[in-house]
Image (cartoon, rainbow, N blue to C red; front, side, top):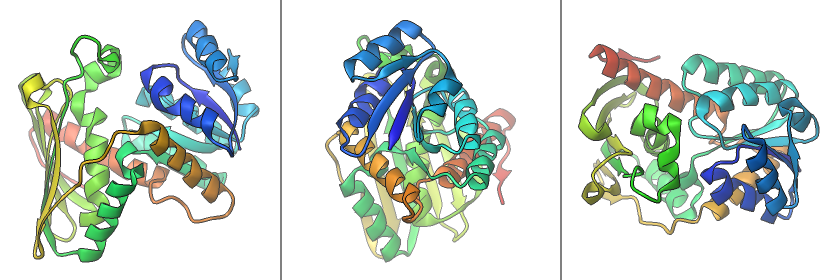
Length: 298
């Protein structure tokens, strides 16, 4: 499958580009970026071609991978889907539910395959945990803590303007929601509060009655950094296992899922429809923070 990469930031360097270049079933065609010099540098590192025009790269490939801010990604994804190109998008797919739904509609109309790269869900140990938890059932609550401290010296993600503006809700929130949704089911109500240091607290009521509690930040004090996820229910307590952080391998599995779906296999459970559901929940949390009211969904 011929791939074009959109984006030249740290995530493109750490995951997307090396994974595309290493994949046996991928022809890494080209790179487009908002900074032409960075696009040329990244393309040169991996034997690809730099592109100055978005639509020219879309025209030359079968699929796109995107490592850009959500609002920039949404526009490119929509253009690619309308051109019949398969989509490997980063999370969140957009900043608004309307923009996410538009991508879903285009992908459906033009019959393109899609995968959203919720990194941890492509790590085998975590995916196996999710599948076991789904099969077990009877869960009453989930508690997810995802607190990072990215604005420390030397952290490349601390330079990201959209992360500074949108914080942990939109950066690490998608990972938390993507973990609880398949286990606890659709979300019907969202309540959220945001405090100092980007400490964002989200309550989700699921259709089956379970409640998720999410604590999210990308600006937590360094001593508070943690990633914990625990389910509680009739069968006891189940904690998500710790895993080695291997983003290139995880992205390669995302590529596998996209190629499989594009070749007539089953759609990925982490496709743009799932991605749009996550965006809808996060947008409801943002609305709740702004208005002080519980937001009902569905």
